[in-house]
Image 1 (cartoon, one colour):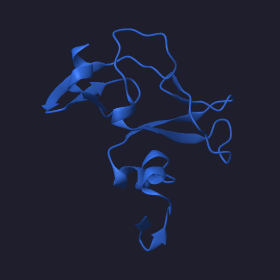
Image 2 (cartoon, rainbow, N blue to C red; image 1 turned 180 degrees about the horizontal axis):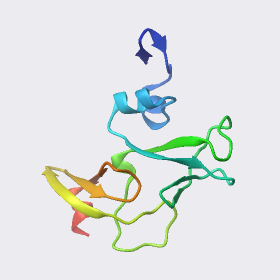
Image 3 (cartoon, rainbow, N blue to C red; image 1 turned 45 degrees about the horizontal axis):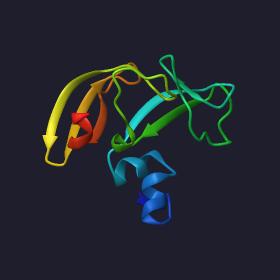
Length: 125
C-alpha cells in the first residue's frame, strides 16, 4: 500500500488485512477500531484502565504511547464474561444489514463508538 508515494506494506491481501503494518493501511483496507493507550511493563496496551493483550512491536518500550486496533468482526458480545480483552459498553445504534448487524457501542476505550459486526444469527443467541 502506498501513501504519498511511500510504500507502507507489501504482502498478501490476507496478511495486509489481518496484520496491517501501519495505521493508514489498517484504516484504508477496511473498518478498524483504534484504541489509544500506553504500553505497560508486561507488554499490554492499557487504555482508560482496560488491559488489551496483543502483539506489541519490540520497538515500543514500557510507557510508550501506542494504539491497539481490532476489526469489528473480531468482537464478541456477552452479557457478562470473565475473559481477556474485555470492556463494558452500551449499544447506542443497532443497524440490520441482512446477514449482519452493525452495532455502535459506547465504551470507556475510546471517545468514538466501538464498531461491532455480528451475524444476525449470533445476535439471536
